[in-house]
Amino acid sequence: MSNISIIAAVSENYGIGKLNKLPWHLPADLKYFKHLTSGHAIIMGKRTFESLPNGALPNRKNIVLTSTMSEGVNEAYYEADSLEDALFLCEKEEEVFIIGGTSVYEQTIDKVNSLYITWVHAQISADAFFPKIDLEKWLELSREDFPADDKNEHPYSFVHYKRK
Image (cartoon, rainbow, N blue to C red):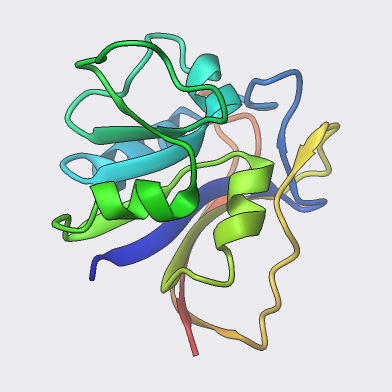
């Protein structure tokens, strides 16, 4: 069985998106996301996939959860109509990352082994939210804190949690 992790950038009020886009400009988080997920499988919902500016993310096995399967075969990504089917497509993968959105996070937060959360230290206006994290169930393994700078508009922390 693969190690299954959630990766998300989450504001202090648990916001993760607005109008199907990230509600902040944090290039350091995008670089961190790419570093962690490259070479691995990623599972996302259809709206998250549609929000990607260039379609499927390179150097990753992209799996899109959708209730409306496309006709024919797409070489850039796989489709699955259930979380179980998506995980079946990943059975030979060493690491699988759940990358959003809200409903996919809600379906998986009780099933994953670890969380990679970029805490964005700001109250953000959002219309998509991450499920509340019960910190009694998670052990913080590592934390790196960073101030806002000329490229990253908010202070942020990269935090890795493991299920207790």
